[in-house]
Amino acid sequence: MAGEFALIDKYFARPTPSAVLGPGDDCALIQPTPGRQLAVTTDMLVAGTHFLPDTDPRNLGWKALAVNLSDLAAMGAQPRWVTLAGAMPAVDELWIEKFADGFFACAAEYGVDVIGGDTTKGPLNLCITAIGEVEPGRALRRDGASLGDQIWVSGRPGLASLGLAQLQGRIELPEPWPRLCIAALEKPRPRVALGLALIGVASAAIDVSDGLLADLGHIAERSGCAAEVKLVQLPHLPKGPTYDADLRRLALECQLAGGDDYELCFTAPFEQHLAISRIAAALELPLWCIGDIVAGNAGLVTVLDPDGKPVEFEHKGYDHFGQATQP
Image 1 (cartoon, rainbow, N blue to C red):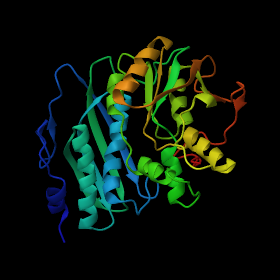
Image 2 (spheres, rainbow, N blue to C red; image 1 turned 180 degrees about the vertical axis):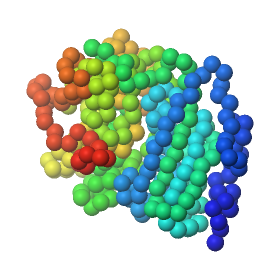
Image 3 (cartoon, rainbow, N blue to C red; image 1 turned 90 degrees about the horizontal axis):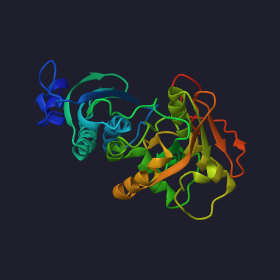
Image 4 (cartoon, helix red, strand yellow; image 1 turned 120 degrees about the vertical axis):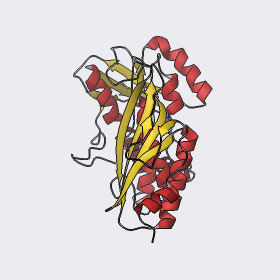
């Protein structure tokens, strides 16, 4: 059985052309582009909390990196480097090989180098640190929304949460939902190109990881304002055969509070509406105007029905140390 350093050398030691010094020493050495700031993010994925233990390791490798790149995307940062630390209960080389294939496939697609990390024995747990670059003063932040700004979201939030419900046997989705939703859950697409395109256009941004309402609430709180989301302006979910009212309700809850989508939620002045439409066309990515930033208690997010009346939802999003609020 291969030891720790042999496993690293075999599966994770790859060329790192953008680093001064890559894996193999006590530290990696990186040289930021002159005049750029570094954006740094760290996320953990724990078996049983962030992914099902029997998740395909290739998909898990992709997702482990993708969710970190999503944080960089939300800041308008260009991904450059990542480190990977992991614990596993036992050495399973076939599992490790597939995981590495997925991880490095994501790294190659988004142009990042894996410059270091660590391994140890323990419950399955993955921890990635991603580093990107952004021009000084140009990063997209959560605290820039202003009264009158429009609220936007990319893609179709809710698919990942519906995919999880399908895998857990809590629902039986009609075709073609299962394939679309499980793919959204297991192989999310970090919106890096969108984040870069929104620099100078968006006033604030966040990635949707804990639920649309919860994450929009973070923008509203940091910006000292409230937000209104209009049900009639939410993204359309994929069409399938006729489904009952219970599934429609669950789909709406997943869309608003399910999380794990890694789409971008952002705000922008009304004057940027046309620019955002052009970005959507250029990226071939649907961008939906779902509401407005309004006066009110900081962090308050209100959902309005077609008649403009507030609609209450029991779940707002996911909190690791509070009540588990996934639909």
